[in-house]
Every structure is written in C-alpha cells, then in structure tokens.
Image 1 (cartoon, one colour):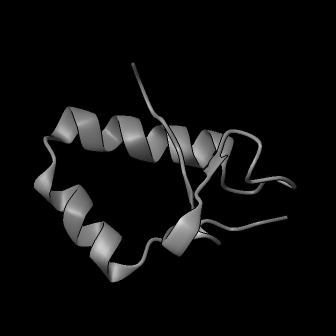
Image 2 (cartoon, one colour):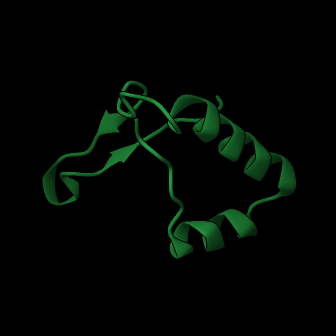
Length: 60
C-alpha cells in the first residue's frame, strides 16, 4: 500500500486555494491515491525533464 504525503511546497500551494477547491483536491487524493496498491491508476505520467513524476486531474 502507498501512503500520500504532502511536501511543504504542496501544503503552501494548497493553502493559497479557496476552501472549497482545497477540500475537493484533498478529498479526491485521499479517496483515489492514499492507501491504494496502485497510485498511478488515475495518473498521467509526465515525460521529458519531468519524467518520473505524474499528475492528476481533479474536477472538470
């Protein structure tokens, strides 16, 4: 199982968002990424100089 850990930079960026958006992102990440056997199920793997990272689309 994988655990979701927010780095300090991510925490700062989340704090800048309005409350509803912040809750939506955290809720989605907790539901779909935290404590899963495959955290990449909903992810798009990035390429080029960002290889090794992934992104998630939350919402519309």
